[in-house]
Image (cartoon, rainbow, N blue to C red):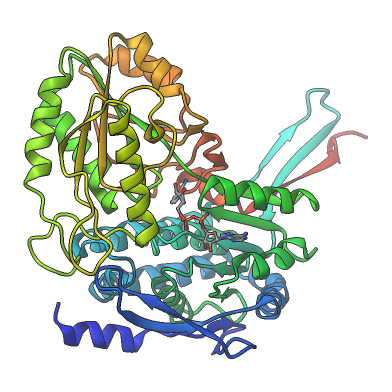
Length: 491
Ligand code: NAD
């Protein structure tokens, strides 16, 4: 991709608010800048909404709700399918846009466009499969009919780390179910969402069904929407502290919520593991998105008999990684999202080292103008180190050891989070035991990536409520209603 491609892609992306089918400025006329984390340069300025813009978006969503819910499911399905086709057609441009605002490697952005698009295809297929049931009550005196109907207008709040997939994973099932939405993307990476919404409009989503507000005042814009009785559902992906603030706001009206929150994934390597596979899985689970994923392996727990060998092999691979701009060829690790993220990685490494960990490779900030941190391997991480409880969200692979399965499970569960766990073992029964004993919403058994549009993604404990994707994803946007009727054969 050339500088001309970059300019073309940036010139094409809309930068206003999208409300009731129209792009326009914020009421205040204010804008904010979006920067390329590889260079610190401003790549676009987008509208900076205030509370009045947010409520205007909710007005549009509420007004469009009844008509959208009444449209035949096949029509909603067709619109989503057209959006999926457009996403595929424009995959290269969307990937470049994502790399420019977020920093991830172009190859990873392409992977995210493919992954994110699948939620749109899946939702287009699910739109026509929403069904209820009919049954005789146990007494034989009546019939029960269970039906599903759309929850109503939704507020969807997304994070910066997967700017397309986190948006498609919410918007597509909501639309499939017959809900209208107000979307609030992260202010660090609004451009990909704006480009996706333009695609939805082009695919035929009617005015007011999808509305987007970009803002640097997330709380000021979202709280009045959450407290408004017309809103029927809040779906949030982001950090656990923000998620619990939003849950408190939502509790006042007993609002339906879905929460995809933080993680602290354990990555277990047993002494019977295929070590080559474990190393490949580790690199994927740790360095995808430079570690900035809720699913990133945070704690590598390795059986003491194979730990030295695992660390040696992983270190060889990590030492060979090249740091650089995501658009450049031959780069393995891109920048972190901002300076705060670099400072956090620096602090967590220093803390672990002060408690006895050894740096095998990396450990410092990268050079240049971007927000880089070297890919790092830490060995001998000791209990009490902060990175065992905090989300690292950076390219730091931290290893500690265990002596047996019981200790491995105890260490793995020693966290408030429970989003995903990874385990490498050749013992099938052990794999099954882990699925029953690890406190997690997802388990990658001998794989380093679990995300798939057909699977129910989500966590237990402080990692959240509800699931996205799979058969479960659309249910988050449906209400269950049941109808009791008399026995039709009774006199
Ligand atoms: P964040 O919580 O800071 O922000 C997420 C979104 O919430 C952004 O759009 C932000 O503007 C908005 N926000 C912040 N304060 C708000 C408020 N008071 N009211 C309304 N909206 C508010 O998270 P982040 O830094 O963007 O993303 C990283 C976090 O997201 C990590 O903790 C990561 O684990 C988590 N995450 C979870 C999943 C998952 O599926 N479980 C997926 C991706 C990221």
